[in-house]
Image 1 (cartoon, one colour):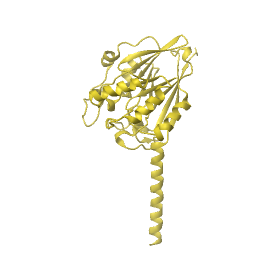
Image 2: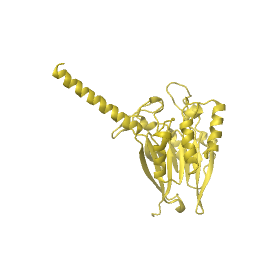
Image 3: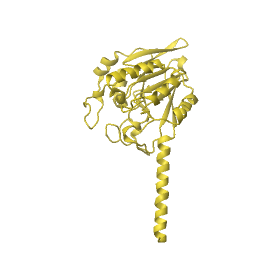
Image 4: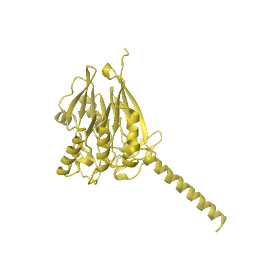
Length: 291
């Protein structure tokens, strides 16, 4: 074989191996993203309160029985674990991966969960069984309700929003393309209470509605970090097939109200993540005592 051809083939194979290695790392190496949320509204008793957020697992397994993911959760030493939807996938008929994870962490930490669009696509009988089994495993399934979390005589409110399918804006028109507005929010959740309030929702793209309603901190997922993350720009594509989604990963602020968007754990229907490692989000609340 000609030496130039050999050299070109060698370079091609090296580049191919480099790309394959990079894709493997970016889809299987778990990253912990730590965020500090400071507010005067956070009660002093909750200063240093740690929350682990998991989202968009899509039945993915990190090591045997998700041992690597579970280890990351333990290392974070959370006071609370929340799951913001699409932890299983619409095509999973057993949900065994998620069930094992739920069983492991549900016996150790207080765990709260809201549905994503994938769970809502299950048949009603299957979804009811899914909810029932999660409850048996110690996972609190939230359906447009509120729980009061107490600590040393003070409390915060945790809200769980069931974001309806008709407000997801998929280009294939599987759902309606309606805007989720203030009236929809009040119809679903009622009025916000006086305590510091954390809203769990799968879809973060209605952050303006959530913050206007009064959520001090909103936790969402769904966007998968934009699947491909570009340096200095952010996520490239949302599940709605829209380029450069406004909220794709990290912390956002609107008039003092915060939004944390998890880049998620699985790959969903896209199949791969690029420059976008799966992440476990760790949020620490701090009471802001500055004047």
